[in-house]
Length: 400
Ligand code: NAD
Ligand code: MG
Image 1 (cartoon, rainbow, N blue to C red):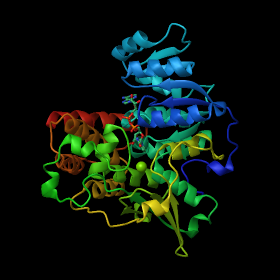
Image 2: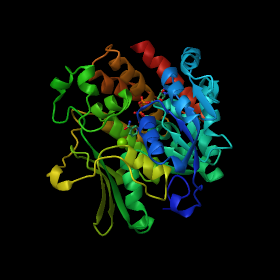
Image 3: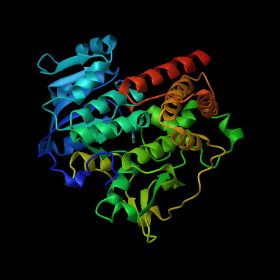
């Protein structure tokens, strides 16, 4: 695929096994799933680096187990916690602070970087991995929302290869592999579960609580992406992610709600064929596909039994009750600085909702107001991207 964000993975020589991994966001939900794949196939991997955020205790436990050469935490409190739990015999060297993630993304002795930090904090490490020419398993969709154009340019310059971990984009990647040329592609169709409030109206959404919003019907995920799934912002971010990954305009990416989360997305060709990817909704499946690409390995998830599922249903998204998907599409259309605003306000609003400071429907209202206020700026450098992200966060916090 000529318009792909990086060299098309099938066209490059992949690193041999055992692959040396750097897992950023190792203490999160994606990190858990990745380490299950690693534990199932220990002969295929060397865990060279593990990065957590503030959870020093969990990171220490992982380091005691995997004995990576390097680890990273965000701050001194996490560092102290880490040292309270790490065993004396553990050989790991610990780095502290945001720069540590950039360092662990670009290590010489690493083949594959799993970018699975949550939020805009994943942007700089992902860009660093791209600049360093790594193979990147990309879960952190926010990094493309902030700077997909910069990551694309970095991959072009260095030859870094991106493998999409996000289940929908992994499904699209598989649906595109070896099937026709770019001009035979008609559109991509992202499936969305609809989240826990599918079918509900605005009046109901005004009353929902944090715990209701965190209870995703099909997927077990971190808190931020769970709320994004409930507002449909996750699908909005994924729409932008798909445009950057596959180099397509937003009008070639559609969304259909599919509550069972069995069909993970579809690729439509000009002849009307739609190729779907189906599977049990468990992130170990796309993660294993990326970590072992192009080989396939067994994964410990229940096999999909379609007769047991029985019925697969599809419906249009309700953009009136869930405006975030519309806002994301409009932001991408408006130019490269608008998605940065969309993402920054969303992160502040989701955090405030999780702390029970604002209501559920305040999230899209804050984003829409932030986008309305925004005057486009040049974001052609990483510094400009980060400066805008920081400015919008400051302003949004001040308005809360
Ligand atoms: P999570 O909250 O469970 O884990 C986040 C990880 O990032 C943790 O290790 C945390 O310590 C670390 N972290 C948080 N803030 C950080 C910071 N400022 N600096 C460095 N590290 C920090 O999140 P998750 O559900 O694993 O999601 C991770 C990413 O993967 C997100 O971008 C999400 O959109 C994407 N993703 C997740 C899923 C899923 O099923 N969980 C599916 C597709 C894509
Ligand atoms: Mg997804």
